[in-house]
Image (cartoon, rainbow over all chains, first blue to last red; front, side):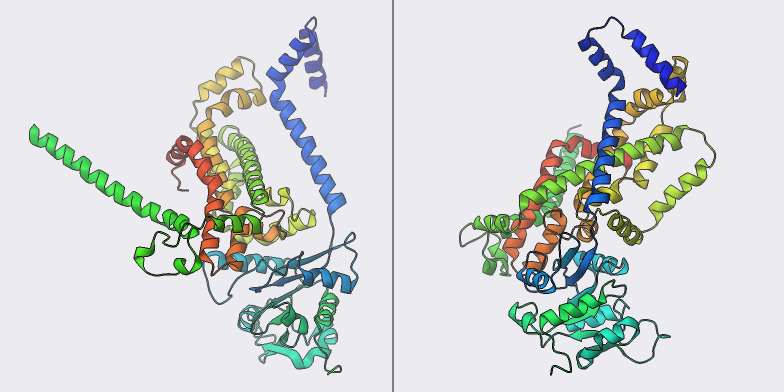
Length: 232
Length: 280
């Protein structure tokens, strides 16, 4: 601090008798980098604080539609209708519908890998709540252990009404179970999936391994018009 | 003498023929991309090799279709801003770290530099989930900061700049010390300007890698307003997978910024490759 003060006083002494323009050109000549770094740092801190404290919003619900034939992103009618159906307040939390995801889990190479890794990252980070895709693809992803067992834990109670629509798969971890466990719900009977033309030959919904909002996934199933055993 | 000259001329001709053939091979995919963008879908899937040129007219409207379907202005803006910030951040952090590792003496220097090297040895995919969680917890998903974040610090850049600083003569810095320069002045006024060619190389590498980066923008940018050209193009591939003219029109538009950057900085690109010994 003392050094800074000394520096300030000596610079002040040097600039005595200079005109304003000369003072400014002296500062620009010798301190341009300092000014740039300080201004940049202040701008960054403001930007960062603004985003971290004023724009951070959790998600109500985050779903990914893989290889869908139609646009089912945030601007789609499907998403907007669901927000209205669920009565979400978007000023409080976000709803993410992602349909920009195209991969075949059994194939490797090119953008396929990038999409797949991006998809897996969102699941592993616990951001994604559910994913919908064609049956073959779904089974390939499920075999990698990325979807929850719908007959265990909190999910068991929530998804029990859809038992007749369960899609089964052998778990990734053989010590977990040697027999197939339910990991998805067949959406072939959903009138909305047909109406929006999302998939040609049916599709399956899976609850992501680290989903934070399984109850919202049930709400989405209700919205899609997937009938429970009781309703049938 | 005459036979020597004839031999030389023959060598030159042969070299040129080989270079022309190689150039042709390199240019064919680009020519195919542009010509396919001007065809109808039916023409584009024709396997007849004589149909390289559009024979049902030049369909410039394919560019219009893509331009209207996707907000290319936003994609260009996001991509160029991401490249700019990544280059600025990478050069700034790498030059400071490179100077510290290359010229300063401090305890644990080798151990810390080993950590930097280790980062270069592991695949980038390993960092994706932790980085995603960090960006997500900071509330920076779908922001420019989120896009720039993984490129702010670069292990390769640190290594490149460290090598650059090590190659500079010690007496330059010593002379500056005698003249009364402190460490900051020695770094900013004497040493940093001398590593300009390494910084240019790093800037070019960072720009090219940022332009090609596909996975990170796809992860952190879920909406079309914040995504980049590469991720936007991949989305188009998903949507227009079988419509080759539309896809190729999009690809042509997507490579434009890089072609312009290359034309402007052609000399630096070549120098950059020569300086770092890397490939783009």
